[in-house]
Length: 95
Image (cartoon, rainbow, N blue to C red; front, side):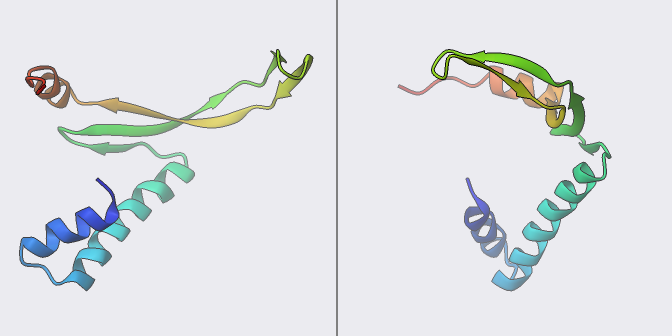
């Protein structure tokens, strides 16, 4: 599913396409801006998103045959809710 699919789902629920785009784009941009600011985003019964610092490390590249330093950087951490995990685990796989 992508943004266009979300726009279409909201449009089918009766919202005008322009309103659907505003809702979806605002929702996503608010999540992104909060993560950039270092805030945690919690969507109850779905997931939580946060950032954390990953320390810099030196790795050895097998293809380049040399050591490469990867500097400290932020990574996104995602944790899904128990309810969502249970729902997904109880799904039957279709062949």
